[in-house]
Image (cartoon, rainbow, N blue to C red):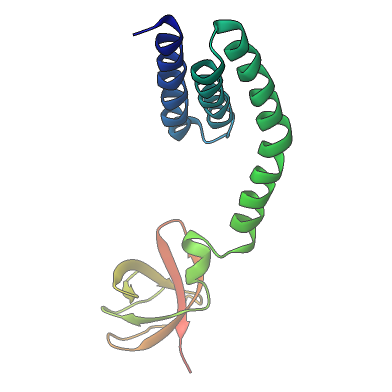
Length: 148
């Protein structure tokens, strides 16, 4: 193996390692640096020499971090903020009481999952089998009212 091929292989391993490490950070910096390392691997293999690889890594990394990363992050954050995620998606949805539900507790089935539940009003009592509406999620407890 020639020195240029070894240098290209080192760049390739560095690039793949940075891309894999991105899973831990989620900030899109390591993936951009990994992309720069992959560009450097290609340049080193095609052009030869360490200096062109280092220059390619620097230029590609700067372009990726400052030109590609910000719009990518904005796009992904915009998509997350506009969608109903986690427990917010359950609010306003139907459920069924699987045990008696009152202000002190009970159980409901939301979708296919069992949840602890309590009523909105202290004097409400919802019997088993009654259709309910989820009005709030408080911790791991669904706050429900009878469905009319």
